[in-house]
Length: 596
Image 1: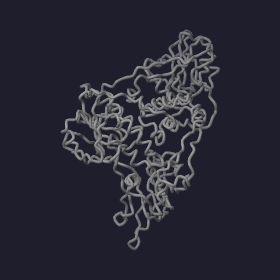
Image 2: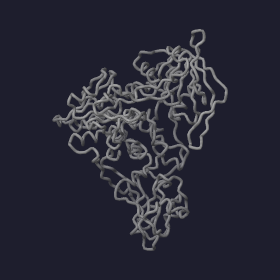
Image 3: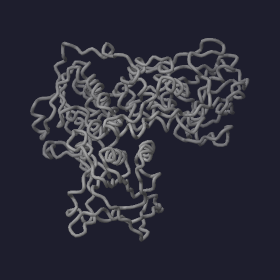
Image 4: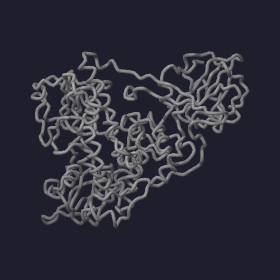
């Protein structure tokens, strides 16, 4: 069989499931080990290098890392990676002296960033230390984009947001806030060397069903309503509120309405509870505040009786999947009238490029999205780049950060006269963690500990002020206990064929039976997953993780280890009498270069 290529970092990075799942490839196990050592400031800076907003994302990240967490092989719940990120922010010391120095002598290149959301701020963070002059434009009077306007303060305190935005703006970024950019053509005439568009997806989708015109004074788009609350244009809600939609914005709307005085708040969705787009924890938090979620109902009409708005009429539906796998809704014949005073529509968001002229050479596709090179985020105007929700539609903050890193690399290459497709790479190193016969420089004991719950304040305290943060975060004791659950997936089992005597000690001790010594298979072209079916002690459960396959040994056997089920416990290396197995930590010189 074909030996696994371990000459670059691709195989090893993929094995670190949590880091690979994070769009910005945050080195999760490394910062959790730093927390375990109480090195909170070091852990914060490691986060800051990758995800830029540890305090923000430690509260509101969509957590793509957690479903990938290897702890799920041992317990039901993954490590609380997101909330441990918050720990680094809560317990860090002053970091001002650790921030990158900004060259006094600039490189002569000027970059314009449109929109002051997470993508643009990341671009500024990456380019300012390289000597660029950066100007950032935003229609609001403060930076942050949707992080400020759409996420309620009870989930994300303004002080946390301001602190992490200021780390970037205080690098010397020029700001033009409180002013709309209404023409890309005019901006192009200002001789910026490159322009980055990070304007997000600021346009809410309306629900224009029957009765809309007569009822529109009682209907608001969820994201606009949340923004008006944030900027204190709205400070109360009527008693009865219906929220349409099942995503995180809908959860923010319903919880905000209740804090502003609504006593009867319902979220009504067309899907099942399980199929709702909101994160599970967001649904749980809404339920904990006694907000009713009604599923399997689709809006039919806004109801007005005798000239007075009454509510929304819904059809009850049941869903099934057709032969093509498409979900189909079928009406049951039953209806529901949800009486209310205000309807908040949170059924989706769209980008808005009315300010970009269509005759300047920037191409748009059939969905009115800019045509981009996905690898570089460069548009058909070579000095205009896009990122965040403005690039491919609504995603999340951590994806916007990853886009910011990617675009910053592209802009830097472009301004040097190098094609942005010439992506940089990263050197990598594997360093042994061996400290003795049976000792490692990391904790490798696998205890069956359950995930620690994050403490919350009481509802009575939560509603005293709109900005009162609901989650208290981990105290130090809980943080250290939760950090100990990490399985250190970036410390790899490295195998050396030349010193192996095939004694099978590693096979015997492996708690997951992931190590196999089998006769070599004379086929280097067929995928390994097909060749190895029925030949290993444990069948592969997931196709997306690779095998570690050795070269042929003297006996004609090969070693095959399933990277999907390995727990990185190090027992194979402890038992091996010849040192053929070792536990080695992966380090990368340039983590941004891995964001492809």
